[in-house]
Image (cartoon, helix red, strand yellow):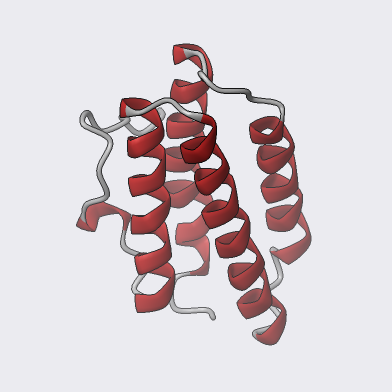
Length: 119
């Protein structure tokens, strides 16, 4: 069963992966998506994309350094999500905003949680 999407869309400790830098980056992703929801402008959408892409790049680097076995599949999910977000234009539809929120919640709590204690 999927995890609920918080409303308002804010990061909380239930999303902790216990790597401070990655948790801080997850917080920033939540914040930029929250801002995109409340001020649905091209600048906020672009910032959300940049913050998310930078996080994915760093997280993937950690995975490579740790020889994480799920790296290839994890990277593919990141690439697919970024491609979808790149297709958005501001103002972003409510459906696409929900898609992004839901994807992030499910991804962190099911996919990212797999690397807890492994990186």
